[in-house]
Image (tube, rainbow, N blue to C red; front, side, top):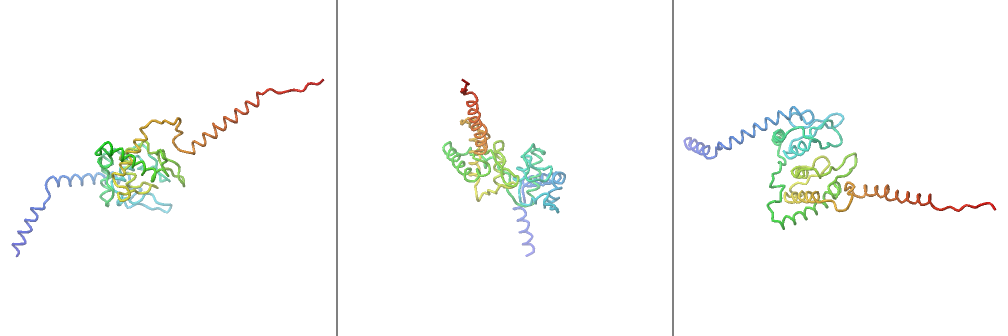
Length: 265
C-alpha cells in the first residue's frame, strides 16, 4: 500500500507539475506585484493604507479600501491623472499622469492581488473591428440608444458633461480614450454608477464607445455649438444677445425719430 501511494504521488507530480513557461510567467507576475507594492507604499499608502485597506479619520475618509477594485480601477484613476490626489476633496479632476504606463501596470497588478476585481480591458473588448460594416453601423446605432438612455442625464447628449448636486460634475467625454471609457463604465468611479457585464455586456460597452467616437468626429453643422451644454448656454445666449439686441435696437429707433416742436405765435 505504501509503495502504491508513493508511485501514485510521483506519477501525479510528474503529470500536473507546471511547465517552465508557467513558472517563468508566475515569477514575472510575482516580480511585477512586488514592484507595484513598492510604488504603492511610496505614493498611495498614506491615504489607502499599506495593504489597501483604506484609512478613516475623525474628519472623514482619506482613501477607500482598494480590496476587490481590480486593475481596471487603477488604470482608469491613474491613467487619467485623477490619482494620486493632492488633497481629499469633493471630486478628483482629470490631470496629467504622474506615473508612466509600466508603473501603473505594476501598481494595478499589486491591487489586483489584494482581491478579485475587474481586469483592465483588452483591445478586443473595446473594439468593433471584428464586425462587418453593416453590423458595425447597427452596433453604433444601438450604442447611441444605450447612451441616450443611461448616460445623457449626467454627461449631456453630446458627452460634454454637466453640473451635478453637492459641488460635483460629470466630466466631458470628448478627450477620454476608449480604454478609459470602458473602465469608467466597468468600475463606476466616484458618483458614476457601475455598469457591470451583467448590466451592459462588453459588446454593448464597445458600441457606446464607438457611438461617442462617431459623434465627436463629425463636424458641427448647426452653427455655434455653445459648448453643446443644451438649454442653459442656449438660453443665456438668447437673453443676452437676442433679447438684449432687440432692446438696444428699440432704444436706437426711439432715440433717432423725428420730434415735433410747438412754436410760439
